[in-house]
Length: 180
Image 1 (cartoon, rainbow, N blue to C red):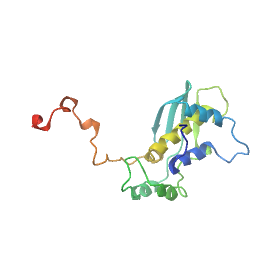
Image 2: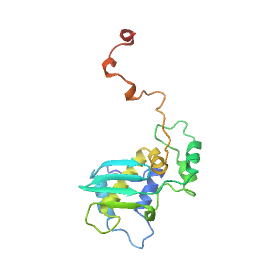
Image 3: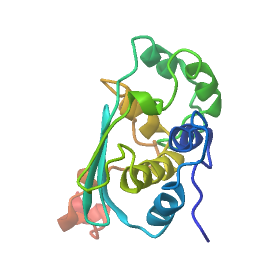
Image 4: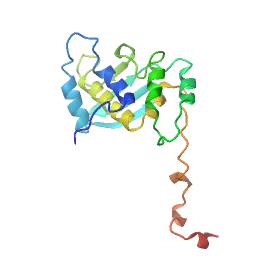
């Protein structure tokens, strides 16, 4: 199955920054960028507030962008996440954030760098990184919020799960009676 980009409202916001309609003709780097992202050429994708970086086909890529203005954190905190899996956010929150804050920054607010020789600021490697980011955001919409907030919310683990850090491997297979 070919991975899709922008399967959720959260990921679609990032795809729109790649496939912008602000230019008069399609970007010729888009097919290559999609191919790179689909074939797993984007590796080591790391994110932090205001920045995403990766390696794409041997080239180091980084994209910086502005954080949200104050007020977005309140909208996120007020979102009803009842019944959602950890890392998921309701699509209605996209509709509430888009008019005042936007989900993904527009291309003119992105600050991409790539180690390739292409002179274009948004080469195929940068675009592939953004496509891969959109896939990660589709899988875990909370990432879209973490990228844009200076102090992202910390998601609590679901009540039916135990964090791995809380387990002692030495005692994992012992019965509770033997531990007591």
